[in-house]
Length: 415
Image (cartoon, rainbow, N blue to C red; front, side, top):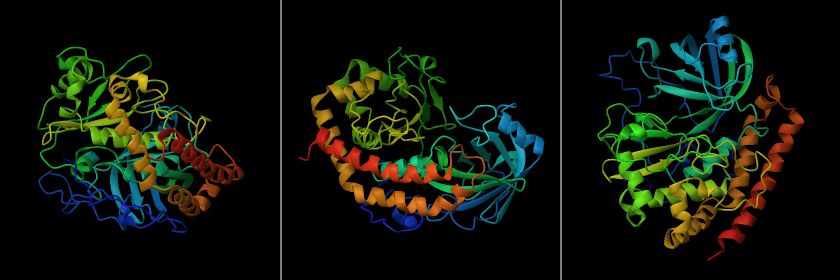
């Protein structure tokens, strides 16, 4: 069983600079000292001034590194090679971290707001704030610069979700602008939501015309490392859990509750529908980035959100988007759509999301994030849009939210 708080929290956020209290996440966090690196053979890092992903404030990050190394990241000329750098985060110095470019569609040579991975335990050093690495996203194509964080806000009320905050990034003394810093799914973040021993964690990525949820027989090499990419070393169970899952989905769907935590799946899909996501598990162009975790204690898979930036009409899709849009693209979402009792539970889940995260709270979150990041967004010298377009986007986003909730009431009903 995933570790949930005693109930879902309905939040009042209007006027709360930075998006509310740090404790608002209803998902229970794991116990213990986050920087206890004893036993890993690595040095102990300093403690952060505040939690790295604390979204009640705008963070400050500075990287100091070779100019050639930084340019190689912008140009993406050295792949995933780690470059040496010093990170100063909210005034705390973390020496000798590893830096590389990151991202999917945004990872292109010459992108001046290239997303980056910071490997904190690289080069024989320990974790920082209990983390091995962090992801700093450039937000190069989101005029509001908040869609991902806003989407995570919705997901977080329903199921385990990465933490996210905004950060002002400086590299070698030059302001690079406003970024989003995101928690990644790995053994440490999984421990915050699930009991040990840990099972296998997979990043699932398909491509156009390919369904990673199709059953291709019992041989694990048909699935791993592609499209099921393993992300936990030495888990308590092996990759045989994947063909067992897919066999049930495709050949014995009546047994779905035995291999999938269906409540978690429906929570994910309902939040997915609310935020109007166009990629991920039921992407418009095929199945793309999301995570699946197999929990050895329950013997079931849990789907986990990741990278929900193409949301809230980011690509001009209408707020009347169907709640089963693109469900035909993979066997698991088709099972939800075509199984009457499961579909009825899905529709009820959409209503539950709208109750847990009412429109006024969601619009208040837009206002709070906007107030927190406005000055940093204005100062961003590398953003691909004007300050006026940034201001308009926040207002437009609130209009889209209102139209989406109205459409969901029509599609999902009120009973």
